[in-house]
Image (cartoon, rainbow, N blue to C red; front, side, top):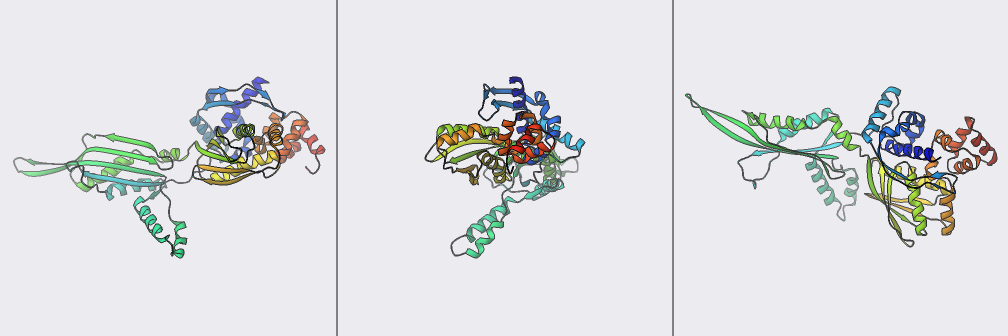
Length: 423
């Protein structure tokens, strides 16, 4: 049993990593395909097991183990892409086209460092043309700043009509590309005609790209080019746009736009005691989109704080929390005890309202089927549940999957259907 428990835990680790690419509902719909082609290959996809707890038998009818591992996320992404092509199924979620802002400065190297920098529209337009060929939207930070200033002015008291317009103003770019090129003007007279030849020599070039969602500098490049000179200043700055563009491909932005995980502060109000707070942490770890949980602070009279690493980018994060965290927890408790209060910035607030005493709450955490099974596929339940008593517990949190399992002839699921009225 211990070997089977460890193997299942490893598959769940890989399943969480798959969740960084695939929506939870899509994963459930294609569970057999993903299991056979990806989850069963955990040995090649897990780089190392970082931590493993002692196994324990829960009052919920299951054996449990906590496993923390490092996974080859690139290999999983490649496996899913290949599977999507061969099986002609759409698995990997779409992240949309990123918004990119561009700012390139070109100036004379002989000018003092205090001289005001001037943007180069020619170089920027060349780079913008390349980015739009990828299908990406290019964002004007200057225009955005102007609009924000206008909106701020309109939102002053007494301008109620104009304030209503502000909700449609654009947001900041996902990525910002900033480049600076320095030129040196060289002149020489050719004997014997004394014709003066002028060249614009590129003396240095720096390029930086920032992910505005995280503040991370995802590309930083400084170089002193050799043999880069042009006879015309406009041609020189045009070439700069092309040189900067060489560092950016369509895949470059897509890979960075898809964040494998993001850390949020989860504030939970209403947990009656510390033991319940600890059980809440364990329950969260089992949920598919949750990669890691740190229990930071506890307060029976106020708010308990958790630091939670969620799979995937922000996108529809409020729906993600509500559908894959709140609903499974409520399914476990058999009522609407957990409610999503807010999801603003990096902070998610949840309210737990239950009139049961702390011992009853803790008992429900211990004895009810894991919340993670509330959205498990019938095939997953078939792998786990072997007896009628445990199947009955699972039916309380995931009745639809048990019904489907019974339709396939599963004996434990069939008996559960007969023993539970109005199931």
